[in-house]
Structures are given as C-alpha cells and as structure tokens.
Image 1 (tube, rainbow, N blue to C red):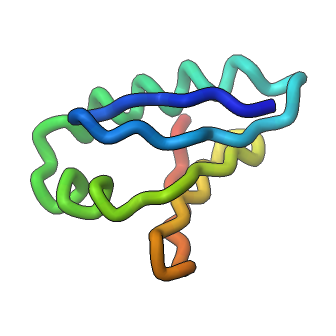
Image 2: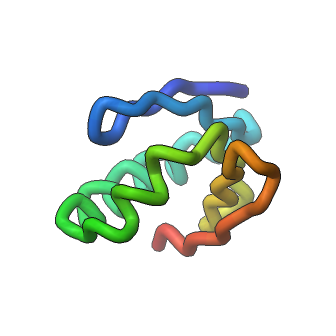
Length: 72
C-alpha cells in the first residue's frame, strides 16, 4: 500500500505492506523527533520515496542512493 506523508512542506510517498500500518505511526513519531535536526531536514528535501520494512524506513534519494533509518 502507499500513503503520502508530509514533513516540513515536502511530501513523499511511503510504500508499506498492508499488515504493517502501525509502523507508519512509528515513522511519523521518528520524524517529529528529527524536527530540530537541521542536517536531517536538509537530507529530507532530497528524498523521493520511503519504503517501510518492519521497523526500518528506507529513504530513497533522487539520485538512487538510500538511507536506512530505524524508527522504533
């Protein structure tokens, strides 16, 4: 399934299996934690999509590189 999330005026699609809806809430909470991390906010502007696999968010940049972030 896919859901659009917005963080700091930048929206990205989040792809996740249908049985893992609770991990979307964990991702949202992690993004709220990172709100004042300016380095992460710069990186977030270049994110094109997010894929959730259990408690790991795989952030994919526009150039194809990936950043793995644990959300629990």
